[in-house]
Length: 319
Image 1: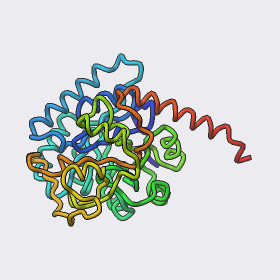
Image 2 (image 1 turned 45 degrees about the horizontal axis):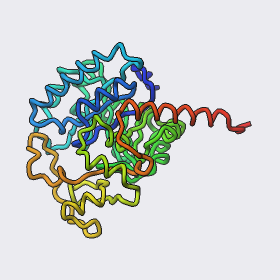
Image 3 (image 1 turned 90 degrees about the vertical axis):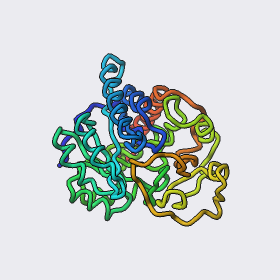
Image 4 (image 1 turned 45 degrees about the vertical axis):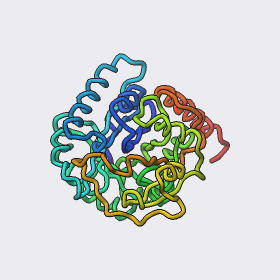
């Protein structure tokens, strides 16, 4: 049986780690609002910036202890793909700053487990298939981040309900599910289905604290699910993109290029990378109507979550 989650939360929500979007300001705001704030370590380049970011996050959360809501823990999203030559340096900073949660992506969680468990942290593995989930569990992951159909960025293809149900057949650890969830009603549904937490990314793109350009935030506000396409033609891995952003960068959503070789080396500069200019989003589009502070978004999610749980308790079944 899994150990209880050691951190109190206002809501079982991760402000998901979003490439080029999540930075210290968004992480701190999420934690101060009582949820889990996360960011991908590749967002901080060069490596010196990653150390600066981790220092800023730990200091910012420490100063939030007198806020109305007890701060949630922070999370570092670590790329363990074989192409990431910066992985040893990232792990050294993780050992120094001790994020309570580390989520590994695009590779096995094994490289992070000894370091993170050494200081008492939790390791979750980002997975999109049952096969990958079983490998992560065998490697010793404390939890799984089940990236499902509807997720933004590097997306999955399984129904979140089917995915969680299948995972629970062999794993009783912590489970995050992500994919198209952007309100408190969806959070309640995911928890009722067997997940412990929800990854919520797209909902936090148009926040005042996100690093997204203003035009990106407004495109998310103005778009719907019909404005998305999934393609591997940008990064080599299937990802969910805003069609208008692809068009703005000379790409035809109906005739995307073939998938390039996957390359996830955080030691490389962002310069001349086409994935810096194109914008991703998930199927949580459609009920996001304005740019707002993270605190306002979390207040709205909390109210919706309470309404959803009250509705379920009021239902006349089972009798």
